[in-house]
Amino acid sequence: MSSYVVWIDTAHAKIFALTPEGIKSEEVKDSHHEHHGFNPRDEHRDHEKFYHTVAGKLNTAVELLVVGPGVAKTQFKHHLDKHHHQNLASKVLAVESMDHPTDGQILDHAKRFFKHAHLFT
Image 1 (cartoon, rainbow, N blue to C red):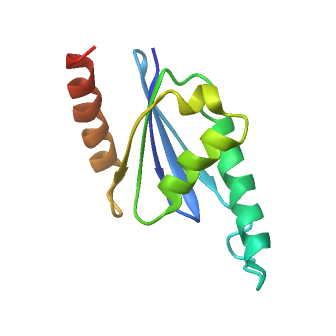
Image 2 (image 1 turned 90 degrees about the horizontal axis):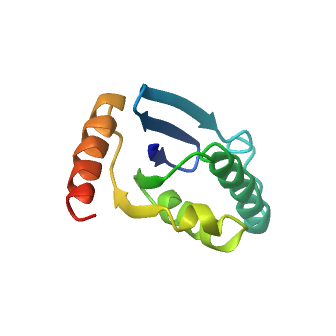
């Protein structure tokens, strides 16, 4: 069983897999973030590519917590719902605001969240 927490903003994502073997982490950077164009549709398309890349890293997720500052976390959830990731979207237990925590703070929050979520299953 792999529980995942993803901290995401428009520039990068931190992905943590909480597995029986331990914690695995990976960071994904948006390669188009520094190439802001003046066309909002191009910027939206670039974010969609980034969200698709992040979703591809979550293939083994059984449950998923999405956190982050700003709007990227909800845009990512919307991407999962609308762009051929419905199976993954159904595994999202919550989308929560979280500013710019340390990796340890993200993991502590995720462990508490999943422990609490499992009390009701």
